[in-house]
Image 1: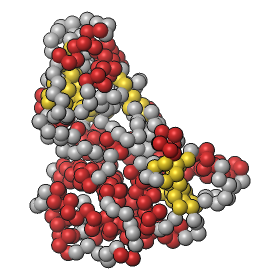
Image 2 (image 1 turned 135 degrees about the horizontal axis):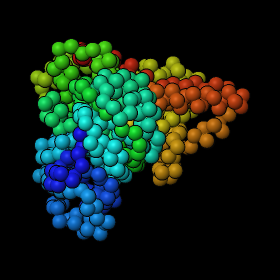
Image 3 (image 1 turned 45 degrees about the vertical axis):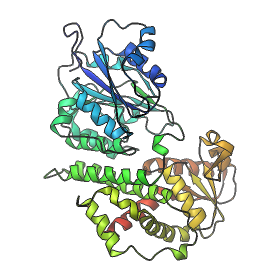
Image 4 (image 1 turned 30 degrees about the vertical axis):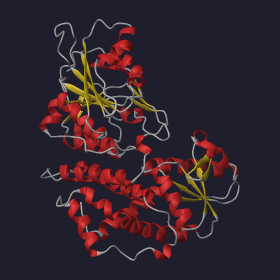
Length: 463
């Protein structure tokens, strides 16, 4: 599969694509790790997405030359400079086009990696479309060792077993880094990233997993994702909401290429589609103006607006044309959400929002502006935010929440319901152990999912 270098001195077996808009010095550590730990011939393809800062291969020589030499393998460097800032989806597609390796790996520019685990694949006779590798997330959300333990190890198995594992998993395949993709597999199935800044990893992985016939699961540490507040994934704005629709449309179009999906494919695909619908609604809620008076929200979208939205999903109109409708879409979603929330919140003055993120911040706006309630955020990373505030609202630690001894209302906000349930179980267990009254626990993902489904039905969009 991945071959030793003794007989193929200058043949590249692994292409590592990194899309970046940061100065070269920030790539130093991860590139040195690649250089020191790779057991196979590899090329690094840097796609520079900052048109104001042109770079070339020479810029990387200084810190690679200072690292301990790995004489057993051959390394190559290629640099592509985008003429405009186009985002990670476009940049990674350029990397795919240039890649010479049998397999392609996509990494970020500020994480940690150890390629030595690939030693287990040397002289492995059978090839696979996807290689699944160990992934750690410093926030603890996307660490995949439990997922890996449910799969066969170091043997080829059918792709639907990986699909089924994610259906039963606490998170969807939203991270691109823990996989090697066979280049010929990507080319044959025309699998590409959406041209988007957010959400592109999940769409790409979904397309790959729908098409993969074979997978190998390799245990052991491979990649550590460094979670940071304020990274690209937490950026907001109308353009990011449109990005998520772009991902949803690309995935839906890819799904429609299949004459027949089996039940496992359908379940995973539609779960991801529902996830994108919810993400879009979250971003729209965050991207638009403050709710001044819920009574002033319009009763419904105009027929022309519904027709435009529907035409986008029928590939008749570019998705960018929906930007003019964002405020109207947001008003409709706000109205649906607030009508669902008010009955549950009527007996509480203060509402705790557990987890800061797109979902938590969107729900906080609905509660504070639309329902006129005091909002307090709860998050383990509370001390990472200046003045212990987010969007002008107080943020406290989970321990502070435990110290609040009155009956309380907690809206748990993570886009993936299984993670919300884990948090809810932890809160309930603690309250039971010390005899506190049970909190009113609401799942933010359910609120947004039901509201998103209602909105898409009103727009006559069916997947």
